Amino acid sequence: MKLNFKEIFLLPNLITLFRLFLALPIAYIAFNYNKLSFPNYYLILCIIIAFISDLADGYVARKTNTVTEMGKLLDPLADKLLTAILIILFWMLEFVPLIYLIILLSRDVVIFIGGILLAKKIGTITPSNFFGKFTVFTIGLYFLTILFVGAEYWLSNLMLIISGALSILSIFVYLIRGLKLIKLYGNL
Image (cartoon, rainbow, N blue to C red; front, side, top):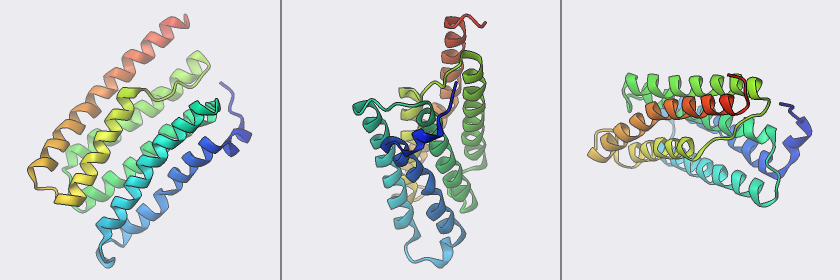
């Protein structure tokens, strides 16, 4: 696995970096939530921009044949950083239960560290898979549901259960995928 830092300047990676920098306005909103007028609208805007940029970076990378090791590292890092900031914010605001915070942060730490260990073992970074992307999508939908209708609404509770269950299941999906890749590369 070799990271080429010049690859940062490729369009898909610049889009991903933009998504990473969305952490700044989200953090600002988090620390000033009660001082801002309509903070939920700003958060909704940031989440929608993050969704669009997440779709765009992968689409552009595939269409322009610029899928890179740097992009495969930055993309999940951006997803995990934004998710962590949002889940901590929502927990601080008492929108989500502590167990959900623990599940999401544990999931992201386990998958990220596991991905790094796997990359060292097989020599390449494995990109996010559909199941992981879908899980992050449901987490984002849960966040949007909270912001639109409130944490107590039945739809929010349903999204909490779905995204929480998928988050736990995704750990096992990534573990199985990692073991298969290690076996495929003959390092088991």
